[in-house]
Image 1 (cartoon, rainbow, N blue to C red):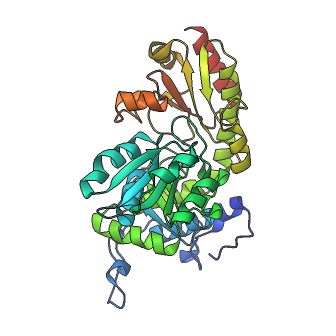
Image 2: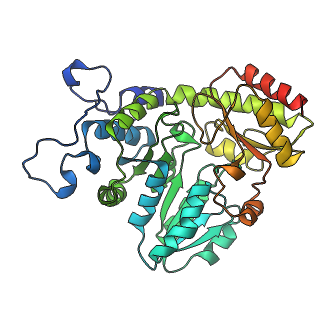
Image 3: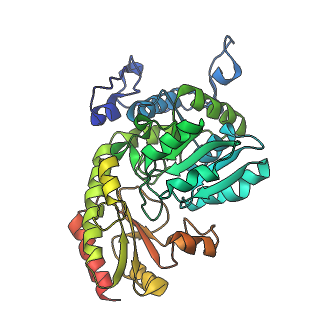
Length: 387
């Protein structure tokens, strides 16, 4: 279906990318359970209609919707968020190249950068994104990519994207931003000049904790490079998962705004509790990036983290006493999830690096769902009272 940039995000989430004319008059995009399609040539290899080549009707529908809501020329879905990240970096880089990356990143991303890219002859330096003066000295003639998260996992730092874009453009670098936590509801990096926006679509984009997927969105020439590599490495998304992601996107704006309201209510309650030493949530005035968040974001999202005065032992007791949150990794679903990043998302990062980044063993991360905020706050207050 033809999409108009003038339409509101909520409208585009429902209508962008839908088949036109509708297939047999369908209201919901059907799942095409076929691995291949009739084809008699006429195009190049990457155009052959085939699940592994990410171009079935289910792929095309969800990819067009993703491109529309982020304002990109093209989009690509992948088998996981890490497939999106790893394939993008390997497509943009070659032996001898250099990457500048934000220091505090999702643990899987940091581990990939540190342990896997060097195997391909690609070097990496990690930056303090609050010290732009150090960026220039870290850049080399071989630097090709600057990689950041719009909001970091798990400390909810808010990156100065305008400064990143200016830095990248001045040096001819490709800027890549993981926009998973902010989502297109709260931030559209491409509109601020970022080259590629990535997502773990497992999280907010799908929003129902029932698939694993990734997404790459941006200029057609960049996305094509990633697709061509993905076509060979095989990290394609199954049509059923495409259909579930397509479904989940339609309620993205409603979910993200409700989760943001709940996260702010919980963050406010936690910062007032005597057992809590510190709360990491950019919607709070005390957060070091609060002013930046207000200028950059349309909302601060549904993720927060906090530290208890009793450390890891107190954190474990809290997890045992809570009734509503589910103790599980991942984030972005309609149910509230809680975890200790030191043993889940950042377990692969060595303890010294975690400590240097501020990810303590007692840090607790909460992905707020769409439960009534008052119920969630009451549950935390009751559990904290028992510590």
